[in-house]
Image (cartoon, rainbow, N blue to C red):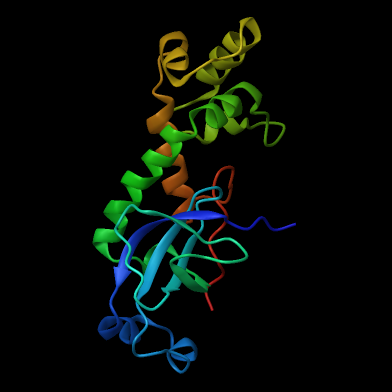
Length: 193
């Protein structure tokens, strides 16, 4: 079952005069000249979305907005899922900061992942998907969590000498960019049409 994003963060705002040029031909036909578009990063599965804003609605880069089912206050329609390549350079920069903000605000969720992460295959552990974490470090992490579950990012940093916040942020960005076949935190990017 696909999980829908309930909330997302604005990473780019595309005014009406620029929006038509950036849209694929099949969407451009339905384009409303007075619609403001925005690119949103989903809070739960780090899904990149293109949305239209309601007439008169204003948003700021980094603002958290409701994008779930039902009545939305600022977002009118979810137009489509987009890929990392669809983002402009300022949005890519904002993306990194917002991923870090989301991971920091959901620290316990990611600490729990460190406490429960298991093998992906017979020869590969999911912890190895974190850049710079090899088999030796995986064994150290597993040993430490058996002794006592991790309680915070700071606890992980002290006990095993890695920066979990940076490792997770980098992993999420790798997944958003579609650079790896494994997706543990982010939804896989949409197929290229």
